[in-house]
Length: 350
Image 1 (cartoon, helix red, strand yellow):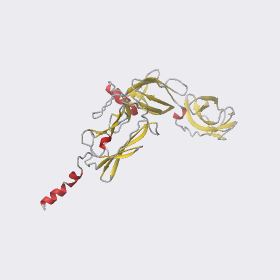
Image 2 (cartoon, rainbow, N blue to C red):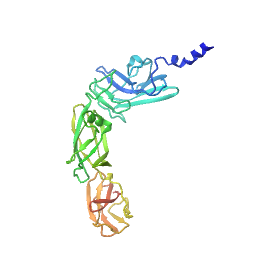
Image 3 (cartoon, helix red, strand yellow):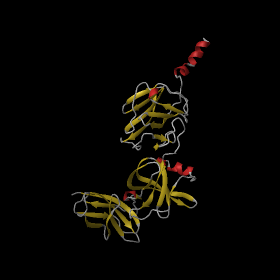
Image 4 (cartoon, helix red, strand yellow):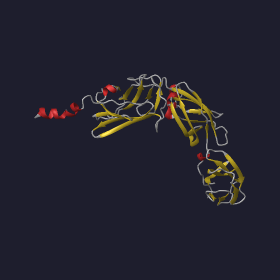
């Protein structure tokens, strides 16, 4: 009876031959000159005590079970390890890795090429898509490291330029981060302990980031303070879209748009307009008397921050001819001196 109990106790280890830990993920996918692919699975930082029963790859051409794999830190998979043939397409594909254990799936995925959700495009033969850490962002790598720990060699370029406010004046003496491109990590490796990207007194910045596509419209901007925590503000900018390749140096400027300004209600100020939508004439209305030291001013912008008009309010209701505006959405602010104390929107129809 003792022998039977002993065998039953170790049945899970027999069933799960060559077990690997739950939570593996895609580390690198290499596309060679002939169009063949190699998948690297990261098995380094696994903390779960459960074993994987099976692994599957799914892509646009179908799905396949990985029938043979080992327990090394970086597991290398080719079509020879699959129960049927699938083709990973670097031009347009969504690749998923399923880890199945005790009735539950863990899924890791990456979309590549010209497909919705992809930020790794125009992959060349001989390149791989890699990630530095288990669940970090991917990037294009000209020096693949299949079977070994990934690095940033062969995968970085630079962007540089200026930060501008809505009046095209420099936003200066601040700093920010681009974590999705490993800029923080790259700067830390080159001696910047915090990894922040400095915006200098002229509004200029320079950052080294990884090779991939970017779309940036918002950043958390930090203003350093002496002997205290920095002030932070989420700024929105005219969207910039760009693709960076190894050794590129691209000029990217960030111009703030007015929608970054949060509506502020001070002293019960309510700012509204009618009719909305408007065609030829619009009325701007405030429900408070001016309790500030400077006149109240209405300023009209479009949604990317271009200024159209500005005028001083002489009463709680001001009529303004808007017939020269094109159809669309516009933003207007209520200001006292240089301080915005309220903001709202109106639409023009034709």
